[in-house]
Structures are given as structure tokens and as C-alpha cells.
Image 1: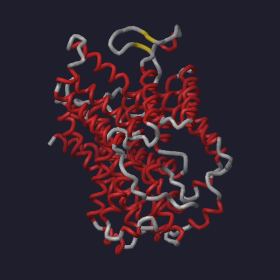
Image 2: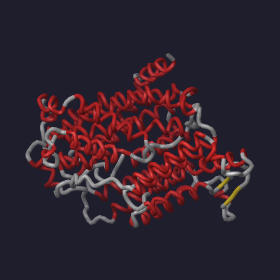
Image 3: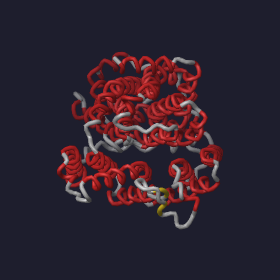
Image 4: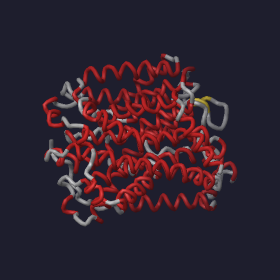
Length: 509
């Protein structure tokens, strides 16, 4: 009953005009960043991060949740119209959406994407409201050795879930852990790795690392492009549509079937709970399952609304699942929730097993924002503003990215009022740029930085409990469970790699 009361309180807070304004504003920002190729919801929340110092924690989390949901679904706009996914999670949507656009059915494809996003996002938010409090109760059973094994499991899964080299993912993660060790020791009041610089005694702030890794590095990557615009404006002529064209035909919705929507939503939510999986994996798994179980698999890859529905339903449902490990264990489920974790820490909130039992009312408005954003704002925004959003991609790169650069640097200074920390944002931006050029996953670096202190703390605590004997990790049942789970994941994802389903790639634009 307490859970129900907290959720009702969350919707009541969301109904307040000021909070509602933050949700709508966040949704529009997320839609803009998700629709522009190269910009993502991760970057949007990273730029919003400095503003959270002046916001109420509920308003900040509401805005983050709506940005997350909007950024996930709006990537389908450019994926469909010009075959350039606005977000990585929209790659599978491009496979089916762009052929429909070439047939003159682009608006219908966007309508199916919005419907799938609405259903998947709503189900994911509802499952989050039900499952997260129960998961918190189960988390209380995990003791210190098990917490270390769980975080180690999360980091390993994050590494092996990257599509690049496992070696590069490992190096990036360890580099993030090393950066996190700078400053005061997690167990003793002693400074370490400061290299004689007093400015490093307090450690590396999360703000410059996030802004540098995701904002500054992205600007440098985009600066490499020779195109002055994100998309050739001539490509946008074919994307002009009427508002009523966004409504998908009822006959096609019935053909896809309620079971397909529900199944894809559950798949996306389950994938979202896995640390580091993200929307891309959710969309891929759901799309592959839809093709496997479809009555007409030969239609896939040629503009099939069923494929769009499966992919979009899964990647938006993933949003709800990604919050479960972040709130109950402090382990982000994907890059966006890693930054949301930063927002919570900045506001003095520390997610963990007790968090959902003691401070559920603080995050209940965020749950409500996810649900309302998916159920109401996704179809409403696409219907009212869809034709205008298609013009976003014609903005000149030099104007767009220079504006973002100013916002990022000013934000990094305002967050800490430290010129040194602002300089660190530039340093991390240049470093992340070179890492990305060499195909090192910067997401691993950030998650290594976020989870590194907890990994070290629980490891040292467990060893101190057992007089320095590491056998405690193999004798404690909870630790042994997560270690065994790590071996299983490593075997199936690295040693016995999944077979290529030959899903194909989006057709060339």
C-alpha cells in the first residue's frame, strides 16, 4: 500500500504546473537531441546537469526521465526519413523505415514507430513501478562480498556487451577506475595520486568527466566531418508530410497484434535490466525475435511495420528496465542512467538497497514522468510537431555545435565554479576524442569511473572481514552466485559468440 501511495504522490507532484513544465520542456529538448544525428539524450542530460544545482531534485529527475524517453523514440525520425538514425537504438528501425519512406510511406512508418514507442515505454514504466520496489527488498539479502561480485559482474557485462574489442573495453574501464582513485581514499582520510597538486585532493568531479567525455569529444568528432550541414537539405523535400499521415492504419496494427507489442516490451525491459546493454541491444534482440517468429519473415528488410513496432517497442521499454539496477544497486543500466545517477548524487541521493524503501517518494515523480511521456507526449508531439522536427537535421553543423560547445564549457564552470575543473572538461574531451578515434568505448570509461569507488570499497571491506583472505568471495553464497553468473555471461557472449542472424544493414541513402 505504501508503494501505491508513493506512486499516486508521484503523479500528484507531476500534475503541478512547474513540474509539468519541466517534463514537457525536457521532452522537447530530448526530441531535438534525439532527432539530430550525432546528438543523443546522453548529451542532452549532460548539458542539463549543471542546471540541476538550482532545481528541486524531483523536477530535475522528471526532466531527465522525459529527455530519456524522448531521445529514445525521436531517433526514428531521421532513421526513417533519411536513413541516418538519430540514436544508436534506432538502427533496426532504419532497416524497415527507410524502405517505407522510399515507397512514399514515411509518415506511416513514423506513426508505427510512435505507437510502438508509446506502448513499450508505458509498459516499461509500469513494470518499473512494480518491480523496482520488489527488487530493492531482494537487494537487502546481498552482503558485502556479494556487492563486490555484483559490481564486478556489471563491469564485465558492460565490457563484453560492447560490439568492439573486449580488450579495448577492459582498458577503457580500468582507465575510468584509475581516474576515480584520485583524491581521498575511500576507506581512510588520506589523499592519493594527487602528484603534489592540491587541486586534486578533492578528486575528479563527475561533471567535467561527463561533459568532456560526451559533449566536448562529440564536438571534436563532428568537427572531423567535411559537411557543413547534418543532412543535405535536398533530401528533406521527400520528408514533408501531413499530420494525419502519422496515424497508422488500424488494419496494420491488428496484423502486428497485441501479443507482438507486449512481447517486445517485455524483451526490452528485461534487456534494460542488464548493466550496459542499452537500447541498441534491446532493439536488436526484439527485432531478431520478431523476424524469427513472424508468419512472413520474408517481408523483413523491405519495409515491414512489424519490424518497426518490435524495435521501437523494445528500445523504449528498455528505459524503464535500465532504472532498476541503478536505483537498487547504484549500477547504471545504460549511459543515460549513468548520468541520471550523477544527477542524484549531486543532489545528495545515493541509490542502493535501502533507497527504494526510504526515499521512494523522491523518485516516484520520475516514474510518473516516464509513463506520461510515453503514453501522452510521444504520440501528441509527433502528431503536432512531427513535420517541423524533420527540419532539425538541416541546421548547419558549425552553428549547432559551436553553440553546444559554449553551453558545455559554461555549464562545467557553473557546476563547480572552478577554472581547474573546467579545464579538466577540455582535457577529458580531447582524451575521449582520441579514445573514440581508436574505437575505445568511452561508455566503459564513464561507468568505470562511477562504479570504481564502490568496487574498491566493497572489495577492501570483504577482505578486512576475512583477515585478508580472498576465499570469502567463493564461500559467500551471494558472491558465488554473481561470480557464476559472470562466467555464464562470459562464455555465451565471448567464447561462444552469438551467430550472425544476417539481419542486414540499412539500405544506402
